[in-house]
Amino acid sequence: MTPVVEVADLHFQYEDGTQALDGVSFQLQASETVAVLGANGSGKTTFLLHLNGLLRGRGSVRICGLEVSKANLAEIRSKIGLVFQDSDEQLFMPTVLEDVAFGPLNMGMPAEQATDKAKTMLGRVGMGHACDKAPYHLSAGEKRRVALAGVLAMNPEILVFDEPTIFLDPPGQRNLLRLLQTLPQAKLIVTHDVAFAAALADRAIFFDKGKIVGDGSLEEIVKKFEWGYPFADAFRYSAQRRF
Image (cartoon, rainbow, N blue to C red; front, side, top):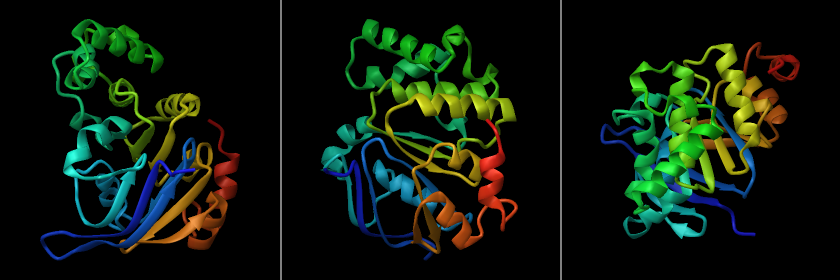
């Protein structure tokens, strides 16, 4: 079976000389959910931004069998949906409905069909009531749901989340978790929240200084790298926490 994400020997250096990725290789299978763990600055977000061509380094990145290249970017970006850490980076239209319909319209979908698609996706994430609202009037949790609706409207095969629980209160985290548990797509989730990851992920990878230094079950990774809170009991804590 061909992986939906296949990265081989990926390197990337920023203009200031920072080596952000140093030989990263990784595969994601269809319907698999993988938590991406590691300290701030370890390369996690830089890695994500290579998956849809926002950054281009040295090495190979393939999405659903397609090489990430200029010629393939439009198709690749329809296959992989990235939900940013700050939803304000994704919401820019006057109304929620226009925001969610923007992607399908940009792909060439007729206006009426794009509007219907946007309404369907907003309903799926529990935001159907907000079609005519301005995005800046929404709470952080509502913005996260609208951003996700915009991604889902593109019919992606892969969903990528950068710190999905940041800015969310506990009810918002629970609602997001329940929603993500219903979505069939393969998922990559960058998070520092071990409990959230434990409720979703089949496995975890651990970044350190631009390298993936661990790949296994979440419990194995948490114990090996003493990751989470409290460190020694991180996985027991995550198992006890109830969403």
